[in-house]
Length: 104
Ligand SMILES: [Zn+2]
Image (tube, protein in one colour):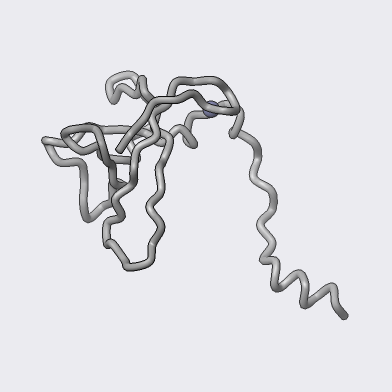
């Protein structure tokens, strides 16, 4: 299942596509990933992150073990290109370690 929408942050046209995990597990919630609608391997500096199914209804992450197959469409998650999300990452500090230190 896939549907078109626009990004809440930058307004770019995106397509929310159901992600099919590489190794399906019981109890895993189904989730959609926003993919750039206008992704083009020829013009993009970023390699595709996801492989769209032939019908463009589902996608899966592209991995070293499972590269893009010829019947699949290359796609890129909008998280990689959204200008509103291009912020310097905050220094990662594990919450539990922080709590242990500050409680003393
Ligand atoms: Zn965006």
